[in-house]
Image 1: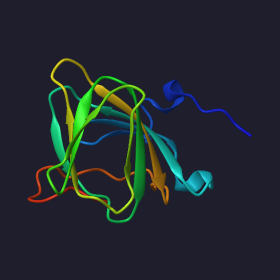
Image 2: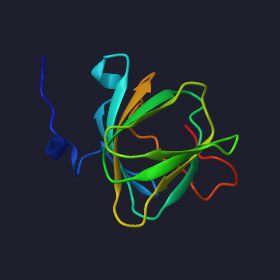
Image 3: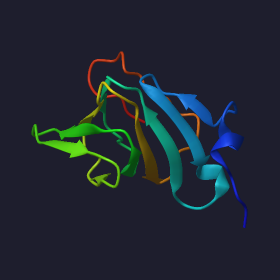
Image 4: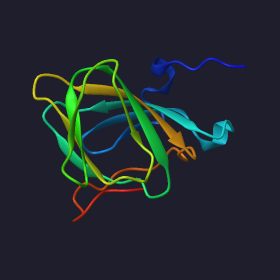
Length: 128
C-alpha cells in the first residue's frame, strides 16, 4: 500500500502540460495497477478535439463546468458530480466554460505510460 498526493506529483515528470490544461498523472503504467488515474485541469475557455485510440477513459467532474460533444453533435453539460465515459474510443470535443477551469478525475484503461502529450495543433483529433 502507498499514498500519493497531488502535491507530490506537481513539478515532477508526472506533471504534464497537455496544451489546454494540466494532467497530474497520479497512477501510471509503471505503478502496476492495470489502470491509470489523472487529476486533469482543463483551462477556462478552451476547446480540445480529442480521441484516445489506445485507451478507454472515464472522467468525473470535481469542480468547474463545461461540456463534452460527441461525434454526432450531441452536447452534454458537465458539472461537479457528473461523469462522462468514452467507452468506444470516442472522438469528442471537451470544452471548459469561460468562468473557471474544469477539473476532472480521469481514469484510463489501459494506463498511460505517463509522458503522453496532446498535439492540439494537428488537423483532426489529438490522440495517444
